[in-house]
Each structure stands twice: as structure tokens, then as C-alpha cells.
Length: 117
Image (cartoon, rainbow, N blue to C red; front, side, top):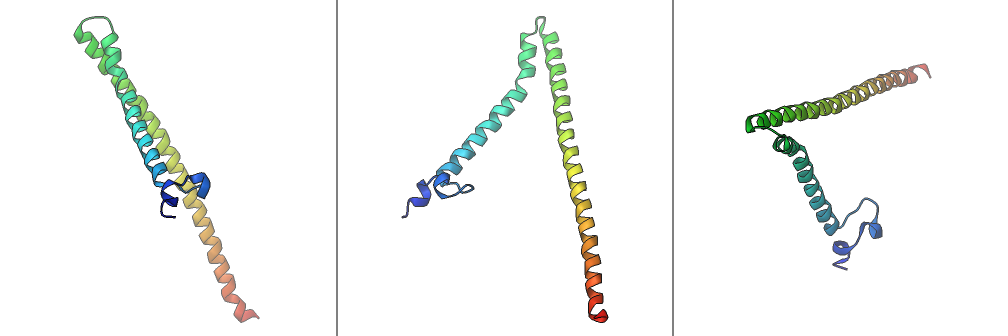
């Protein structure tokens, strides 16, 4: 019927298929997760500075230092992820080059066959 696709679940249709309701739910969950992750990554430095005892100037220094440490940690994580991606691309490029070499060898060997038989 008309509403079969709209209200069907992925279990009833297939593993990778999602209904419109499931796609909206997943998108909403992903958006909430991004904002929650952003808040968790931004709030610790000001909270740590606010809870630190002492005058306001010292609290500002502590907040700035903890934010700098947090930024350095985040950049180190990103650099590690990028290095893994670069290694993966290099490996795939090498495999493609080897495959291309074997394909060229096969094409050359196949080109000789009509003359030798």
C-alpha cells in the first residue's frame, strides 16, 4: 500500500533500508550527539577556572591554560587520525600500482598470443 514504505521498519524490509521515520530519528540523534560532544569539549576549561580558588585573574589564567592543554590534546588526536588516513591511502595506492602492473603484464602477454599460436 501507500503507507507501507513510510511506516515500515528496516527489519521488515532489509538490513540497510530505513524508513523516513527511522532516518529522521537517526538524524536527530546524530545532531544531538554532536551538540553534546561540542558542549563537553568546550565547557571543562571555564568550569575548571571558575572552581579554582583565588582571584579572578588567577582563575582566568587557569582557564586559559587548561583550554590550551585541551586544544593541544585535541590536535594530537586529530593528527593521529590523519596519519592513519594517510597511511591507509598510501597502502591503497601501492596496491593499486601493483595491480596495474600485473594487469599491464597480462595485457602484454595476451597481445603476444595471436602471433605465437
